Image 1 (cartoon, rainbow, N blue to C red):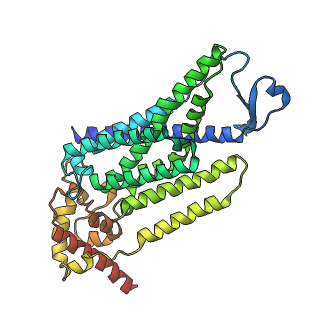
Image 2 (tube, rainbow, N blue to C red):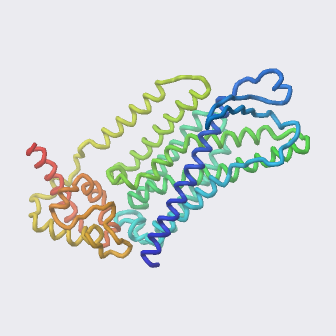
Image 3 (cartoon, helix red, strand yellow):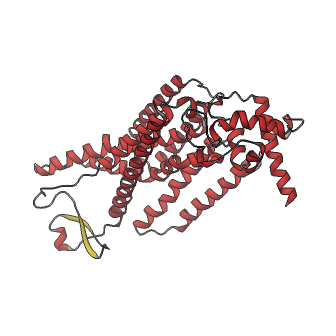
Amino acid sequence: MDTVLIDWLNLAVRWFHVVAGIAWIGASFYFIWLDLNLREPPTWKKEKGIKGDLWAIHGGGIYEIGKYRLRPEAMPEKLHWFKWEAYSTWLSGTLLLILLYYVQARTYLVRPDAWIETPGAGVVASLLFIALGQLCYEALLRTPLVKKGWGFAVALMLLITLASWLAQQLFSGRAAYLHVGAMIATWMAGNVFWGIIPAQKSFVAAVSEGREPDAAKAQFAKLRSTHNNYLTLPVIFCMISNHYPFLYGHPQAWLVLSAVGILLAWGRHYFNLKHQGHHRPAVLLSSAAGLVVVAVLASWPSSDSSDGAASELPAPAQVDAWATRHCANCHGVDPVQPGFRAPPAGLVIESSMDLAAHRDLALPAIQSSYMPLGNMTGLTDKERVALVAWLKAQNSLEKEAQ
């Protein structure tokens, strides 16, 4: 497919995906906030069947919002449904996955030292990873754990951690983070498609016909909606992680991803408690403190064997040659690698001086084997070890100079 066409399609779909995601996340946050802030209504409202009400001000006006236990005296002609925000976000995200990670699988999806190295097998593994993740989540929803809040939360954390580890073995570092996010986003879209909307349709049909709706089905739909609320922040983290190679390129990237995702969901718990009138600052503070601990540990200098594996640091001329062969094809002023019309992230790396200038970004990417992309240029293990040692030495030299 023509490179220019892929670029424009990527831009258009990414823009639509972001806008749709904002709409979906905004609706999710708003309705959870609304439901948790409903209070006991006055008697005259109860007599009309109102279960809870809320007063709010926005856009220069005062709003009165009420939630019926079942239905109003007369069903409205127009009832707004909230589903296409979720569907369009998932569909556009899937199209992005195809455009970037399937069409350009050799570049972005696979890596030479993973369990799967060929593009075709990588695409199949991707589809199976997301599909099996969905089956595991749906199966978990049907266990007795679903009625035990903390027990289910622990089981879900273990499932996400296992998925993070597995993705790291199957895909490139960047693709691994993205796939965990795609898996969770599929859970969320599935909650809307398989649970929330069918339950709402059943509810509306029952109350319209004067029947008592299935309370268990409605409660299950609300539970799925609550799950989506907690999963939102981890998904957003996964979706923007491609900007942070120091995370997805970390030797323990799967553990970093799991820890950050769990802590973000825990931080979200503070706001859900607050909406109910329970102010627990310890929850928010512990979430923030945990993220700081993860950042410190993830940034701690590693004591891997690569430091001593290169007995002599390569000469600058050798590093220049490696930069020309393994970096400049994509990160040159005028990239020659198909699929790149400009250096990614604006990083120009054509010499040892360029590598040294960008060592903080280059080191984790090269050390984790994420770069060169798909190792299409054939950087050997020995060369990689030497290049990592040289980049680390540049850090030491700068510290000494300071």
